[in-house]
Image 1 (tube, one colour):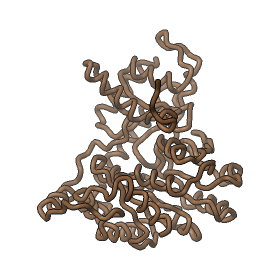
Image 2 (cartoon, one colour; image 1 turned 135 degrees about the vertical axis):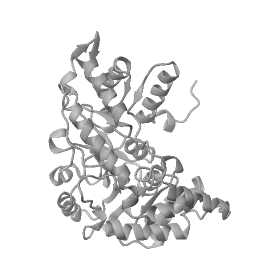
Image 3 (cartoon, helix red, strand yellow; image 1 turned 120 degrees about the horizontal axis):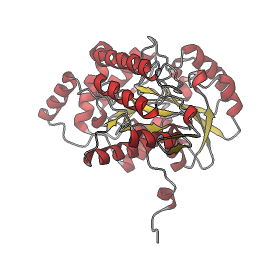
Length: 394
């Protein structure tokens, strides 16, 4: 008899983490698996950040931290928002959490009542749907496709709004598609939202610096949007600090206070040493991480070039993040090596078993025609992975 709660029984496992676990399992059995499933930079944390952490240890930053973060870190985050995004926040509007994932969970918990609808331009990051559902909200997908660069138009947004719409969540640069919304596109979306003053926006900007378009726009910087936007960011991706677990929000003060309240009951303040190291990261000039961004850019060009040679792959050219999200529906209904491919789940499993390459089904991101693979690994590994995929599909 199942003694677990309905809440946990109804929760899906994270597909990216599940695929990564499966790849590790097969590796342990001696299989030569190339894992392109996790979105994790293959660089080490920059030395200047590590030095700041060592200094913090020597200076005995070992006590509980304030629930919403050290005031020095919150001031540094305010400087960062002003410098990089044109956003004016005060420290009382900043909450530091154990990763941007906790930031998102806090927001859902403090903003959503049962039945509130949350618009999610699809594809979306894999955890949005489950976080919204855990908080009593109803995820409403707004589908996009490779033909529109996986971006939602203002018209699509307007058509999806109902009297129950409470929020819209999106990421730019987008995980999984790598799409980056331009200022013009976000201005058109903001124009629609002007008519619906009760809808709040979650703008997930964790990939902001891994961006090849030369421009970046935060929706909160568009006139009239700051008061209803919750800007989510963190240091995991751009600074290769995934394991340090620091994310943060800038939000209207009443939302920041509510997020602090819930965090105070659930985890309290984030790690003290990681917070001191993050001060160095957010204060740094973007030139300090340019070498990583340049490497991702080269890999993107390499991967796009190789993937375009694979018959049946339809691709957009991602302007940011470190993923490609090919439409593979050409293969649905076909039989490869005796395996019938009905959907992206089958396709992804087929690549794991017949090419020894771990990817993630697009179904997990709200687009059942695609698969996602990460190019946050060496060029040699990427060349070999795409060679294997091409061969397994020949």
